[in-house]
Figure 1 (cartoon, rainbow, N blue to C red):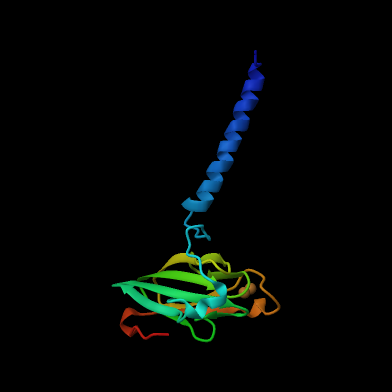
Figure 2 (cartoon, rainbow, N blue to C red):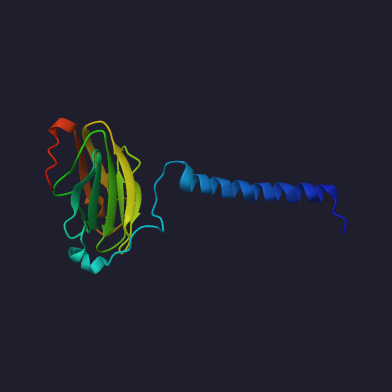
Length: 169
Ligand code: CUA
């Protein structure tokens, strides 16, 4: 079959466009430092979080010299910890967030950091944040989750290393 050279050109351009789209999506998903919900996250029973080894007593736990795990439960309309009490971590440390929901879909975004994820009941969203400068960072729910959605907020407090005493929350 003979293909006209303009037809070949358009086929080529079409293919290029498709490859371009795929490359853009791939870059957006893995290349840009944006952390999203992924399939590798742990699965939990949202109705039984109190029995979970970590979510049963959520909060900050030191796991390395400058590394901390933080488990957070999102529920209508608070982060625990985060809302009633701030999430307190030391400056210049690596913070691994594990966030889940006990009711509906929420959002978890720490303003001024790369943390920005959906929080889905039954799934654990994992996000690593480098806590650098001491200060207060707002945490917001950015998925509509009910009539109290606009009030669903919290705080991450980054304190200087020497002030941080590792107190449990
Ligand atoms: Cu939780 Cu919006």
